Image (tube, rainbow, N blue to C red):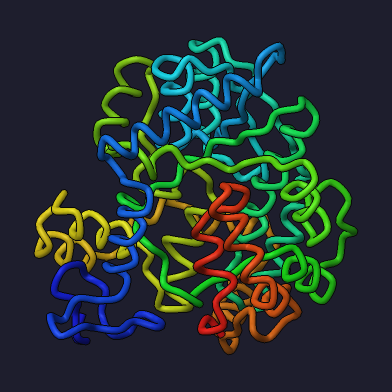
Length: 381
């Protein structure tokens, strides 16, 4: 990293919208500090606030088969969340999984092992594999970074649908800004209109089984069903290292090699597509977070960041085969001029206009605070 580097984390001057203070500390460190202060992360006040949320979940779930939704991807954060929900918090969760048909065998087995031992019911929405491939290929052809955005938004929509079906008012998400960091503003983006417009322009198969979340659906789940999105790791102490150790010991859970690598399209996105086409290496998000909190030495974080990302053997060949691409076609698309969400129709301007509303919704846990920070700021464009 030859650019100016934050004195506290490892973000450098190439990061979108980065600013440095008089001590060369970046605004993303301050943003993380502000979130930790807002949620009293890991402090008695944070646990006290989360206890209130748990009591409310149990009260509103009384008499129902399930009192909350917990996403199940087979990854560390969601798997440990299921463990905590049952073993520590006394909740009755429904595990919800969106299957984009790109799961690794590790992910599938991890979900089975954890839900079976905890005796948790599993709700799965499986998209048609050809349709899923067509949507992913559309983003590849559009030459934008967000090739995995359909998966992320699909997960959110399936969680809402499952919650509505069973009358559940709370979904628990496994995100942790203390371990995963704060994503650079404006670097990537996603919404339902973005996905629909990309697929309409570049896709060839009608979207039927994909759980698209358009603006009206988003507002329906948020304002009318009032399904709250809770991120417990924003309130309590949590480390992936400890979570992995417990999951391996208690459930025979297997580690898959790194953050986002439990799903093959996510692995391709983070290990190949981002770094090779867009010069984005999102390992710096988590490495910066760990350096920021003192969990690892900052120099060690820089050293690790300067190594090449791990790429699963045959992953690129698997990607080409799934999307029916020749070597030449793959190379041609990888070398197309880079584009971004600014080149296609999105809800971004609408989100900006509704910024005051989304602040209220974020404070009420009806949308994540990170959504408010990332999607409603005009500075992101």
